[in-house]
Length: 276
Image (cartoon, rainbow, N blue to C red; front, side, top):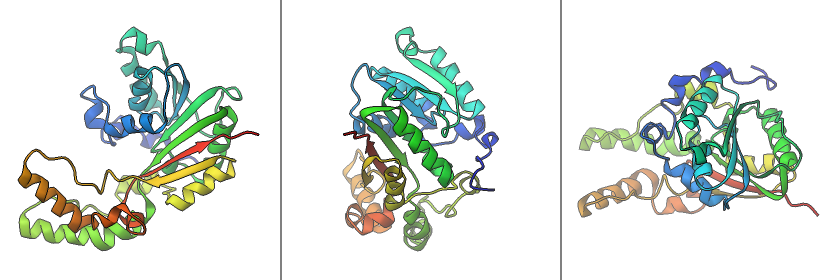
């Protein structure tokens, strides 16, 4: 497949969206923590006009509208647009009236110059070929208002997939599963679906390159959610969870460079459109 091609939109069918991150929350009528975190990261204020690129099921689009924004969600998957529109149609009228869902290619956005206060791109950049991502970021810069923000989350962190997981975490998980009858992650480095759709996995350094190519002033960081011990009810479970993170992710070293480059699997970034 050439750099000028799209990933086949038919791969993003209803079955795909029933399995992707946050689906367990979505189908219970809830919003996954990642989407709520994105709103906080973006410093959203009521009344802003916001674009959600790669809106998928509409998780973030709906969360943004509930936070007071006027939102346009775009996706080039026909099934995604159908799922999102159906979900929005069932919302309270005050919320649904602030949402529009549009089928569109991320590299050619049919919006006016300086139309949006902020743009969100969650888990989409890894699905775009390099030239597509350059073009998409240029479009984002064009349609953002001065001082507007482009908020990006991407996973996986390529260094985690290439080094941290296969060379450290996976072998340890295999041993722990055998010794302690656990069910820790031992998936292949990249699943069959990953190989088809994750055609441009990022590192914290490569992502900066795309922002800077479009003249954004960018701040990037690695998320700590994956490598921080999850909250547990009992003391025994808290100890077990902390031990798991120490063993599998070298916690708390995994919170700091250079270890977080290998063990953090979430990359966040904010690009600001600064005009003189």
